[in-house]
Image (tube, rainbow, N blue to C red; front, side, top):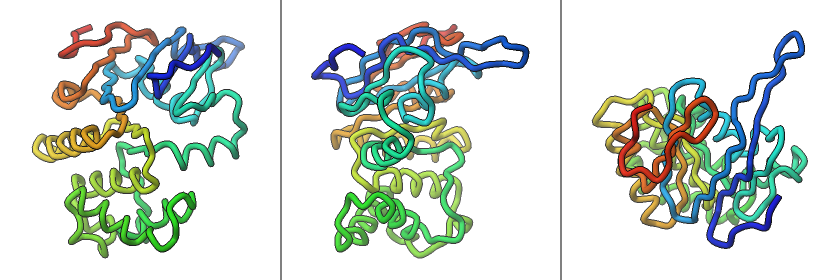
Length: 239
């Protein structure tokens, strides 16, 4: 991989991802993607189903590996890490927000956040509970700390998932369709929270079908058939 750009926090160099199919054929989900995303950027990735959005997110998260090309995030070349190294790196450097929240149902909202800190060990033990409460306050859920996820609305669960993603103070937040299951008003609340996080210096990359959410981003990248169709747009282009 080439020498990292000092201004870029996320870098992809000619990243290709192909999957083997039955009969020896292959499907290429990403075709030579080259991207540079600077620290503090709020980037939205748009595209129809099958355009490669989730594959791109998985490469940046280290959940999948490129077939060829390189991926560097937060100064680390992910292609050179083993699975255990990737897990440790991911816990310290990334916060991931899933479309379906993936909160542990038997733990309270506060316990979900504490578990994320306990697992990584980046935050000193005596600071974890105060930090969990601070994060719940940030997302407007300080009065819901002792409740189980099932007792919260979808919007509240998504905000709790964002608080959990922030637990270890990662420089990069990745979100997969974060407003896909939310009503318009709640989606707007999540958008406002993302704006607040960007103002605090976090780097956000979201994949979404939500044009309204994408309009709040600094930069919009549109994928089509595994290639960058448009970039640096003020508003999304129509494919």
